[in-house]
Image 1 (spheres, one colour):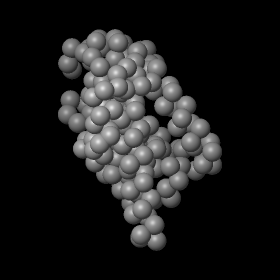
Image 2: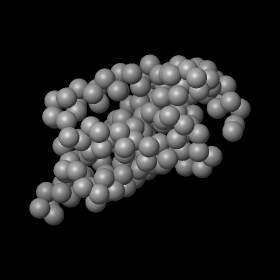
Image 3: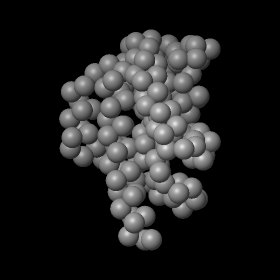
Length: 159
C-alpha cells in the first residue's frame, strides 16, 4: 500500500466510502475495481423508480464531494487513484434508465471506463482545472453522462 493510502483511517466511514469500501485499494487499476464494486449497488438501485434513482445518485454525488475531499485531505494528494467513490457515481449515471440485463451492465461498464480513462474534451479540462472534492467527482460525472448517452443510442439502435 502506498504512503498516501496508508494515511487513511478505514474505520472512518468517509474514508471507507471514498475508497469504494476497499475496492480502490487494489494495487493496479483501482478505478476499474471501483467501477466493478459499483455494480452490486447498481443492482439494488435498478428496480427503483427513475425519480428515486436519480435522487439517490444526486445525493451520492453531494456526499461524494464531501467524502472525497476528506479522504484527499487526509492523504495529502488531490484525486489519488485509490479514491473511487467518483467511479461509483459515474457508473450509476451511466446506467440511469437502462433496462437491467447482464449485457447492459457490461456494456455500461465498458463505456463508462472508456470515457473515464480516455477523458475526451471537456472531461480532461475539468480533471485538470477543477480541484477539491468537486473536482474529484465532476470528471467522472461527465464521463458517466457521455457513457449514458452512448449507451442509450446503442440500446435504441439495437431495439
